[in-house]
Length: 193
Image (tube, rainbow, N blue to C red; front, side, top):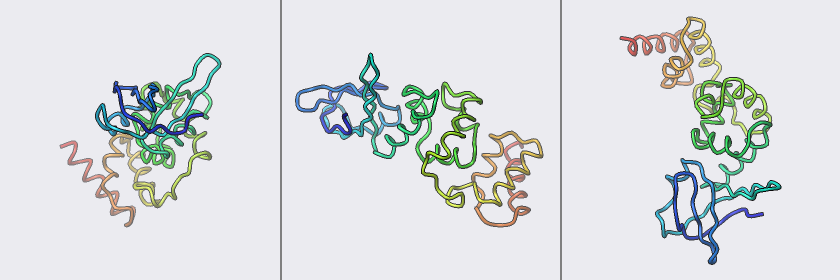
C-alpha cells in the first residue's frame, strides 16, 4: 500500500495530479480543494495517499493532510459512499465543516454536495456520528444549547434552514435565549428589508 508520496508535480488537472517519484509517475485523484493547495508544476509536493484496490482497478487518492485522508477513509467505509462521492464531499466541505454538520445533524449542508440527496445525507449523518472524532458541542460554533434553542425557535416560526444558519452564524455562544433570538430576528429582518 502507498501511504504518502513526495515528489515533483509533473502535471496538474482539475481532479488529478501526476506526481513523479524516482522516475515513476503516479496519477493521483484529488479533491478540488487540494488542487488549490498544491504548488505549481515542477515543484515538490507531499500527498497523503489512500490506495484503493478493487479486483479490476488500483487507484490513488491524494490529500494535503493526513486528517483529510483519514476522514476520506471514514467516509468510504459508510455503505453506499464510494471514493467518487467521498472526494465530492471533501471537495465541497472542509473537514471542520463536515464535523460541524455531523455534530449539528445539518442535512442541508450535506445536500450541497453533488450526488448527496436528503435521504443519503440523513443516512450519512447516522453512520458518521459514531465513527468520527467529534468535538464537544460547546466547541463547535452554533451548537451551544442556547443556540440550539434559538435555531429551534426560528424553525418553529417558519424560517428556512438557510435563513436560520445565516441568522445564527454571527451570534455569540453565550447569553439568554430571548436576547439571542431578538438579535437573530433583527438580523433576519435586516436581510429581508
